[in-house]
Length: 290
Image 1 (cartoon, rainbow, N blue to C red):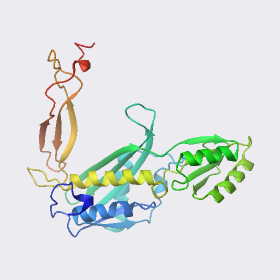
Image 2 (cartoon, rainbow, N blue to C red; image 1 turned 135 degrees about the horizontal axis):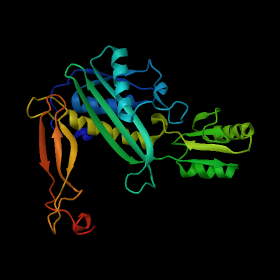
Image 3 (tube, rainbow, N blue to C red; image 1 turned 90 degrees about the horizontal axis):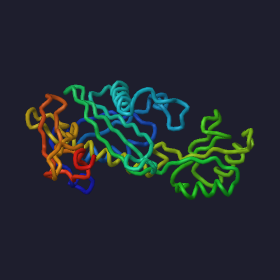
Image 4 (cartoon, rainbow, N blue to C red; image 1 turned 90 degrees about the vertical axis):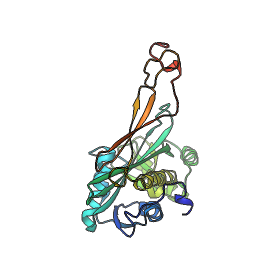
């Protein structure tokens, strides 16, 4: 066992020697292939015969029709169909704000593993701070400041004349000379002399997002390496957390979690695991702190 998977459960032989389709145009096979190979002995087959931008783009030309989870599952099934395989992996990311304060750009990654023979859909997730942002600029000095703050050129940029939804768009800007040329071109095309800049969030051009995709891959691998105690199917793991941890002062049920419900996607077997904390802080109690 090597460094990538050293903290994961002992690998079952369920997927050893199998192949799974991964539909991607943005280099995710290089991020996820080594993880699944090491964790499961399963090989990813890269599929690129479908334009995944048709399912939604970060730069808003094509809005995503379904949820993040639905889109990841759709990619998995499309890849399976195109590759003629019974296993598939779909990946979908989104960028928003952090769940704690709502102030920090945050990356959310979802992976969906589909096993057609077992009727399984197993989900891996990860989230962390993102290198993301946008700004309307009116000078080359402002361009340089924005680029430096957002880790350019390791993280690519996108430019548009005037505003965030202008039909002219320049993606994947990766070097200072190109950035200067495109800035001047976009400014000339703008009615107001303003250029809209944003970070390119596509996986192959955003190393910060790549790290989160790898973490989602490790989360998925851990799930797939955990077998159901009832039917031995892979993917046994957290289904949801159960609120109701009693207040340490008066015993009233609070919104704090008291247990985690572990479940199997194949047979439905469930196990409720108690959370270590015996009681909740009275600060979270609707009676003690109404």
